[in-house]
Length: 351
Image (cartoon, rainbow, N blue to C red; front, top):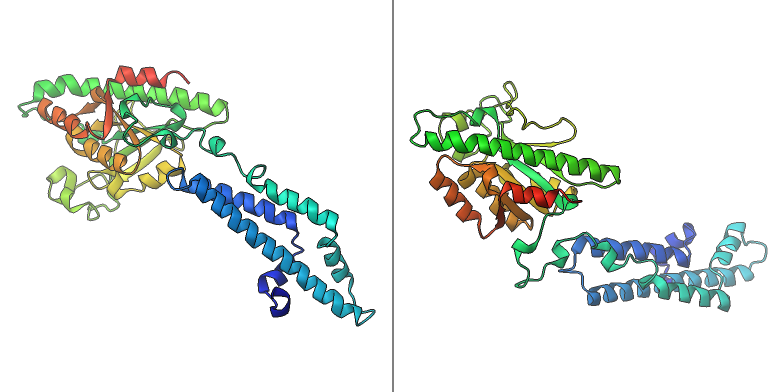
């Protein structure tokens, strides 16, 4: 059929001198890409077997069709001596129909499933998600892995860290806010140490992400409607002409740490953080900052819904009052592990 109808794909294959073993390499790359992209939830053994069978069938059809085209040209040229070009001779040699060569090619095709394809267990060796069993795995049993973890620090900036001396919760703020700052500094230090150790072994991980309020325009017209309705401070955010200022000791290193300017309560709503985290191969998020019952809780819920394993260091978060803090922790209880900063540090230290 292909020989008589002039299959365009076969003609291209002839033009580019495609040989049987080329299909094997392409097939191996295709299966590996599908497996790693789709993950174990979608990509099963049956799915892989089906794809391998289909690809082998297609590649065999293409190869056989190419042979038919060459045979047809060969026969035609035998009727017209002297017109065969050196190109046709080389193509004939490339697609030799010698039985011994065919047998070798058939054996190589059978190896496609085993030799060329990256083993499934090797592909997902570092995937935490692939080891989770629905209804069985307990989120509290999944400890942090430095190579899979990122630290997300929310709204720790000078503009949002001013003490309200008229607040009825002033005593609480004066005690808990400095404690939160110190605990976040410790978390940053641990993450930087792990990042350095990973880099020394040619690995990546333990990234630090700073999410902070800053508008794209000087008049904050791009801020969310909710921020426009939330008082002067949030409706007049730091901006390009007056950038956000970070708190001493909690500052991003340019070119190393990641900055996320946000104009909404949740960093997942007004930035591309989900896209960035996936590019970094992050599976676990440590989320800290302020306010526990607002931006931190919103980020926690959004992250959990997007498939990230969230850990909340309780004493590295702050709210306007003790009740608000407890309320925020309660709202995140079904979406995260909640530990003390010291417990988080114990999990981060060993590499």
